[in-house]
Length: 231
Image (cartoon, rainbow, N blue to C red; front, side, top):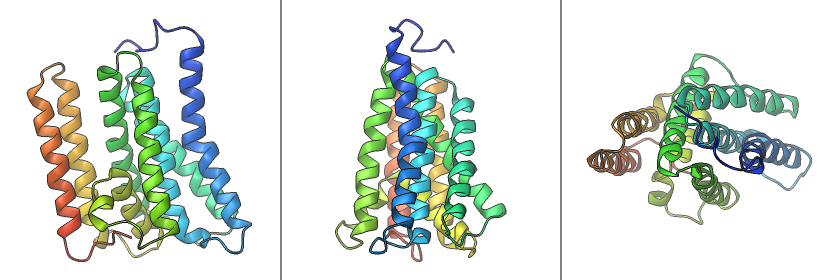
């Protein structure tokens, strides 16, 4: 796939990659450092999963939307997960790592990169701006929920793929396995497949109905399934 930014002025892809770096790495690392050095803030271990999910989303979805390459977005999201995990350990978060973390990170990366690849097609060279707004919106909701657990309704959180990734990563990093987050993983995988269907059959419009129906169905599954943690 030809890079959507190929015909844009030189500052355009530079701004896009800067946004990727800020959303994917600089902002999450800054947040982890602030939390580690602010006694009144939530414990770093509690904050790692939403910050990690948002960092992976920022790296995967924006990068894929810049160049229109799905697997590049997956790779950058996974690399981002490794880097942020290392920073989290360095600032003192007692985390577990293993096959559960690897699986959660992989499925989340696939889901985020699929959305970025779609934005690259639908955004006509400006898909990274759509991706940036999506990341900013989901970040605002997740961080609000982290700071004020009872401030937002559970159904709103259940609509967000970033929250699904948060749930899966939290279960993996706590060392309890993915049992409580299995439906979040299914939701991430299903929406990734539905989004890739749209990309594969572009520009056929009927595929959007499949994608949106899948998203709503998976959100309902996450929300109503007993045992999942929405906060």
